[in-house]
Amino acid sequence: MSEAGRSLVAGIEAVLFDLDGVLVDTEPWWHEVRVAWAAARGRSWDRADSHLCMGRNSREWSEIMRERLGATEAPIAIERAIVAALVERYASEPVPLVPGAPAAAAAIAARVPVAIASSAHPAVIRAAVAAAGLGSTFVTIVSSDDVARGKPAPDVYLEAARRLGVAPAACLVIEDSRNGVLAGRAAGMRVVLVPNASVPPGPGVAEIADAVLERLADLPVAALGAAA
Image (cartoon, rainbow, N blue to C red; front, top):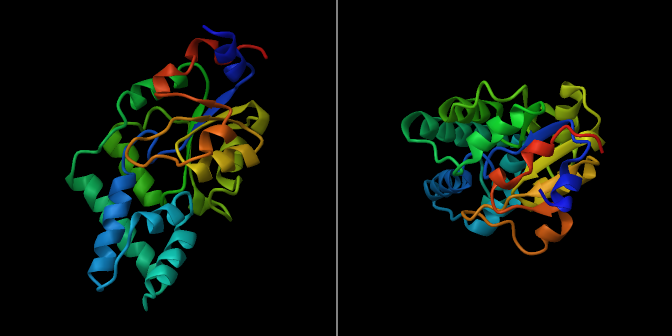
């Protein structure tokens, strides 16, 4: 194991995972559902619009959709429609897992406590965890809907650390997006970026993460929990 790898995980007592793009490759589902909702109302929704929603909690992204589309529906109605469509996809289609990620998460969980800290609606998280068979892996699951602000604010990661009883400085965050990396850094945690090919994080994100890994399985799991 390299010295850089040891340094990355030294003193880490818990690992906090984003969900979409890290464990399940479902960012395209979110985009497709929003495109369909907009098209049904004679409006268009593009990738730039979806990027504005990434990391936001349900209250925030539904308001972004209402504003961007000039929709007459209330944000809560938009939220319910999008969430229902996502849950239906999880129920009716095979979940697109990030290759190797569930197994890697299980290996990490065998060393230190792990949590999901996702921006997704709680119902979507439950559907994803059940469909991916991840229910027994994670000690706790936190949605950005459970806290005041979505990513890039640190709230969801700080709440996950609080529930685990671990100091933020002893937590390692696994992320794939700019807002997620910013949230982890704002929480005072170490952050690993695992870029997702379906929705790349964009320029400059690698530079603000503590490390960039091609895949989650490359994390030096054997050194987790070792003294700093």
